[in-house]
Amino acid sequence: MNELFDWLFAQYEGIPTYLLILELFGVVFGILSVVFSKMNNIWVYPTGIISTLIYVYILQQYGLLGDMLINVYYFSMSIYGWYVWTRKVDGEHVTPITKTTKRENIQSVGIFFATMLAIVLVYEVFDKWEAWYSYTDIFTTAIFFVGMWLMAKKKIENWIYWIVGDIISVPLYFYKGLMFSTILYLILTIIAIYGYFSWKKLLYKKVEVLT
Image 1 (cartoon, one colour):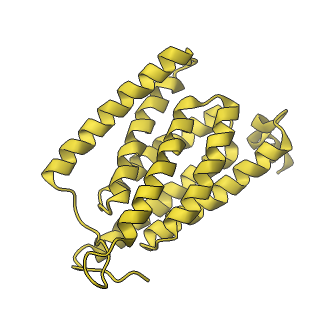
Image 2 (image 1 turned 180 degrees about the horizontal axis):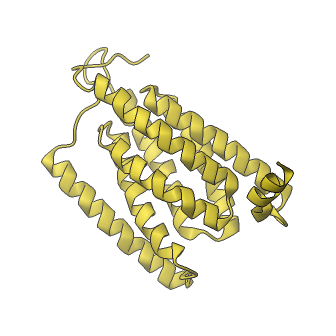
């Protein structure tokens, strides 16, 4: 058992203890955020903001620019999403869960490719083409950008993007040596699957009262 533990967490050898503790807190708040999202609860955003701020700092320390930019974007979209989710469509009802329109699907494709182009430029400017995972990093960044945008707009399709991105991120973060984050994305994959079906049940409700 000790050998397995040592192998799993060998990636943290030489890493400052405070970064390890910060990552653990980031994981906890990240999980809480997705759980609240699954529940269609506004606390998705306060917990998500805390997690993203922690990860912005950690990923900057690791030099993982693509992942860091994801979290900077998450922070911005969390502020926007917080506003959208609490905005009342009439006197007492807030924005309901809906499906994406044709226009929003086109916008999603545009965001995906625009994000990929932007991250490629960042990697070129900062010369961060370190290994094969740099290309995967660009792809997952684009997926998550679209997913976060759709979640902020309360579109059920956001879960599909999260599921795909989370699945890819499990081996990616393991290779990068972030074991707690590897476990996080494994858990997030499971929660995202449940989240999709949970939102699907709520989809046909015309309006929802903020609780």
